[in-house]
Length: 252
Image (cartoon, rainbow, N blue to C red):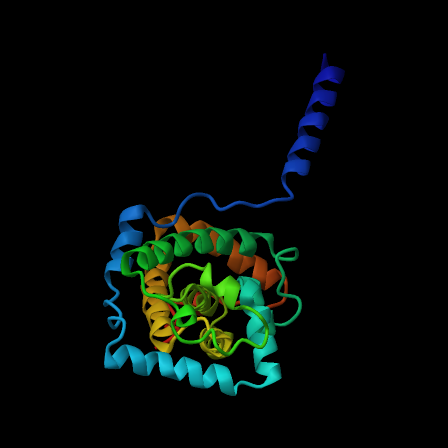
């Protein structure tokens, strides 16, 4: 009997190890009511065709048509932006494979931030610069794809970049300034890309700041945030969670 129990224990241990390769967030951090309340903080965008709206869109058209080839390439590459794009400022070791607890945390944050962003876009239904006024200049042949996209207000990239920056700044306060700058640059490159206006980008920052504060106040996030902090520290990112007492405000 002892021999059988030992073998069974070994099998169970092996199964646990096999299942242990993927880390998942413990639970949702914000409920639907909290996400809806964050969306409600956004002001309505300028009505289409008003002087304010036209001026906002003209900035995008000017920046889009004046961009360099390098700027265009970088903006296009960031279509797949996620939390680990911050390796641009944190170094090549900042990867999901190396940091599974960090990856699980930001995977759940991304899902919840996207849910809020999608609600906002469906509510405001603001058209993107293309097809309104930016499709006539399309050296990369992107216009057809842009016409099939969702609405522009708020920018999803700006929303996520702001949320990610607030959480990363909380985990890595000594790198908070560089993290915040990169988040702002990600948002601006959506204007360079021609798919958003400055108003869309600012709305993303407002939504991202609101969500970021709510995430950091969430008891459900505390355990996962602590696990991410320990993982970053063990990986050599010089984490000092004890000094991360107050949230970093990305997007000012």
